[in-house]
Amino acid sequence: MSEITPKSSADERDPAQDQEDEKQRDAQLLEDKPPHHD
Image 1 (cartoon, rainbow, N blue to C red):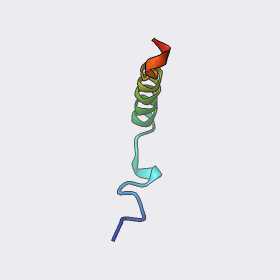
Image 2 (image 1 turned 180 degrees about the vertical axis):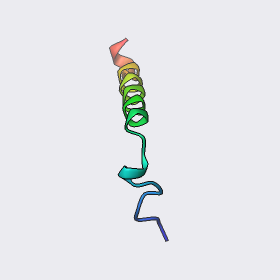
Image 3 (image 1 turned 30 degrees about the vertical axis):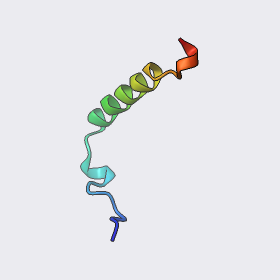
Image 4 (image 1 turned 120 degrees about the horizontal axis):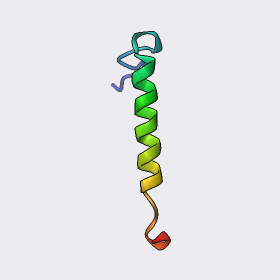
């Protein structure tokens, strides 16, 4: 059975770490360009 609830809830997480993770995701998205954009 799949897990419905996340392993950590919002109140257990570190907001500073969440912001850092979001910046890393944004940077990865900007790096990932389709081949025809070279």
